[in-house]
Image (cartoon, rainbow, N blue to C red; front, side, top):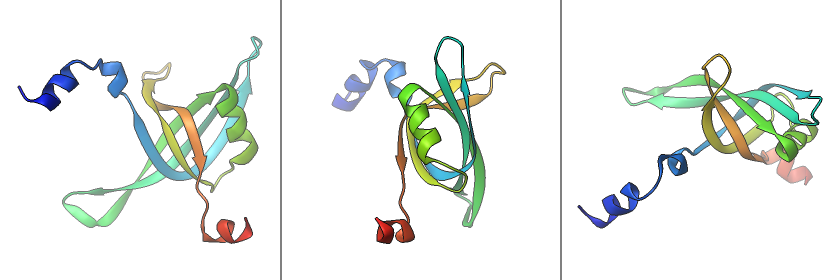
Length: 117
C-alpha cells in the first residue's frame, strides 16, 4: 500500500462528497418557512463532453438548493442567465432525486460585466 492509499483509507466518505459546477442559471425561486428558514432553489445548465463525441457538447441541467445566508445572496444577486460557480455536495430530495446542496456560490463576470465594474 502506497502513501496516497493510506491517506485515502483514513478519510471518511463524507469528506469526499464535494462538487464544483459552473453554468448558467435557468430559473430561481425562494421559499420562507414559519420557523424563519429561507430556502433558495434554482437549476443551472452546463455542458459536458462525452469522450467518444469530443466535438459535440452535451447540455445537462442540475438542480441546486441552498439555505440561510447563501440563499439570501442568491436571491439578491442571481437571475436567469447569470453565470455562476457552485461549490457544494450531492444529496437527495424528497423524491429521491439527486441535487446539489450549495455551500458556496460565486458570480462569474463576463467581459461586459468586467468592463462595467
